[in-house]
Amino acid sequence: MRKTLALIALLPTIFVPRILIAQDFSVQIETRQSAFDQIESLSKKAGKELKGSNIDWKTLEQIGIELTRQSAQLQHAFPQGSQADTRAKKEVWDKPDNFNRLMLQMDEGFMDLYHAAQRQEPSLAEEGLKQSLNACRSCHRTYRSRW
Image (cartoon, rainbow, N blue to C red; front, side):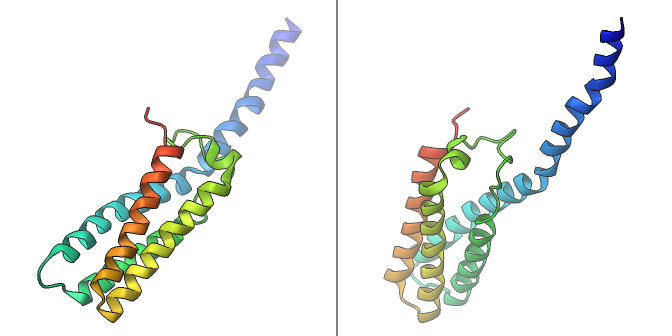
């Protein structure tokens, strides 16, 4: 009886900290999911702009700024312990070197897109966008759970 009461008394101290820890990362998880959604949407807009016959360079420059901002925001959006309730595989945290390299490639590609838009160089803008999207695809194949 005493053991049962002791166990019941300890249960909140065992489970509450885990719940609190998981909740601590809800902001980071939501932020990174929102950033990825924005990156997907803005990348499509950039691609459409680049395929058009008359590129609006100011619009493309603004898209480049926002893509760079969203990408930079992701550089610190995967703190240790934030893998609960996400589709990211544990390798993101267990073996982060390649993951971080791909994130950096994405970031650099968006910066290249932005700089090319400033200089109004369509081929360089396309290359920057392509570099970023290739990094995204590679990262999804390697680090995102399908389920």
